[in-house]
Amino acid sequence: MGKIILLNTPIGNLGDLTPRVLEALKVGTVFAVEDTRVFKELLNHLGVSLQGKRVFALHDQSEDKVMEKMLELAQMDDLYVTSDAGSPIISDPAYPLVLAASERGITIESYSGVSSPVMALELSGLPPIPFHFHGFLPRESGKKSKVFQEMSGGTHIYFDAPTRIEKTMDLLSREHPDLKVAIVRELSKKFEQVIRLKEAREWGERKAEVTFKGEFVLLVNKALGEQNMASGELKAIAEEIVSKGAAPKQVAKLLGLILDRSSKEIYSELNRQKQSIED
Image 1 (cartoon, one colour):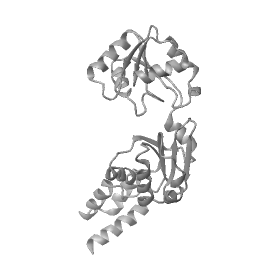
Image 2 (cartoon, one colour):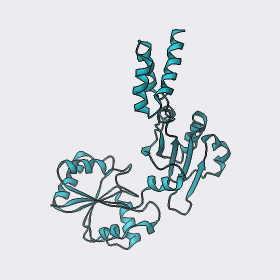
Image 3 (cartoon, one colour):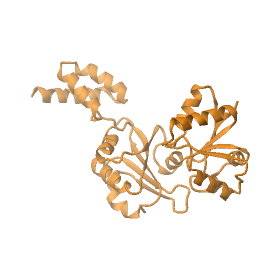
Image 4 (cartoon, helix red, strand yellow):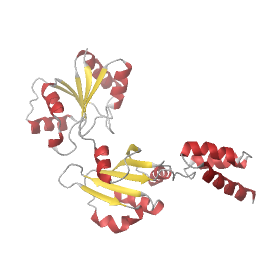
């Protein structure tokens, strides 16, 4: 019986390819890849022959029958899985395959390498613990605004398109001017760039420094303990419970545990809300 082996490929600089992954690319015979053309170009750059290799496409639009075919292959031989760059799991199509394989008892291994969320975090100058990776931000400004409004404490990492990052930052600087931000683009490539903002309000002054091309990673930090009840639905639920007669002190204890905040601060907040309702 074979196994599934996840291969982390370079995100821009071929020098980041690990010897272990290079050896796998040489000796492997069955590959599931995000884009067959990109994969073949990678092998060509590395001087690795395609002879004797079977290469199958596995991407976000792959049908169930394709997934089933991959699982069948992995039960007979080692199946090497790659994305166009970085980890085949991070915002790429390998997760459904890994999930299905784990449920069937197929062995899964990972040959590590450079990952853009981690590299961006290393360069950001923002607190690394805790951090949360969310993948691509929503396109719609309303949904994007909700994402930032409901952030917990810690550093949050997002992917964003070069055509949308400017509007994203305009929104952040307008609605959350106090947050710390780092904008990272073209990681490990010739034109790598890191813009660090002590506060999002600095965006207007720094915008001209950014080249709006390439791949962007956005990092936003909210200090621990600054979570507020204005986190969308949570605030609405708390206000409704208090308005129906619940003791603010008990609600404050519960919210303190959820938000990792002082229950005394929340109690004062709830009391103010209750008084405004009564007035």
